[in-house]
Length: 196
Image 1: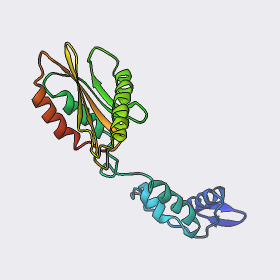
Image 2 (image 1 turned 180 degrees about the vertical axis):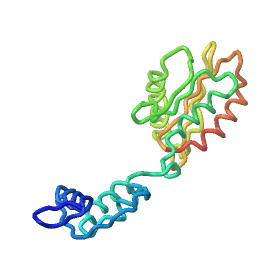
Image 3 (image 1 turned 180 degrees about the horizontal axis):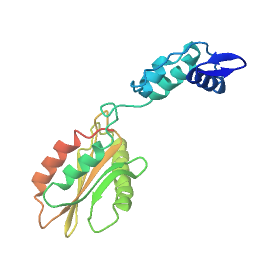
């Protein structure tokens, strides 16, 4: 106990009141904590008096923006698709491309050329074919386009599901190692599961 202005005041109580004044909150209550009791930040929030409601609400408002691991959007879906595409025998490069902009949303592998440039160029191929189909009044969707080079196959699989419309998968295969029929089959199965 300490004497202040002729009154006996418990030092810890005086310190508590000083801290509350610094925070801009007046309090006549004192909720002593047993010396051996350890307070967690959550306990401190719960022990706040009525004037602490605003800070408590702010704390919970801030934590409301945090998401658990299960709530996190799965951002690796396209990267996982690229890994599976590159696992196809003979595959040397793969990309998922937005053909309206020519941008590769995901890409991987080492085909021996710039996949970004190839993505933009093949976007023109897909767009030109779609325009031609519209001019011919063909009511159908493109499944895939095959471009055969001396040492490579270039497969373009246009995605037509509601979750992936406007995209295509671009797969580069080495002709020495690839089985074209098997690669087309695997590409078709993988492509139908790609969504953004």
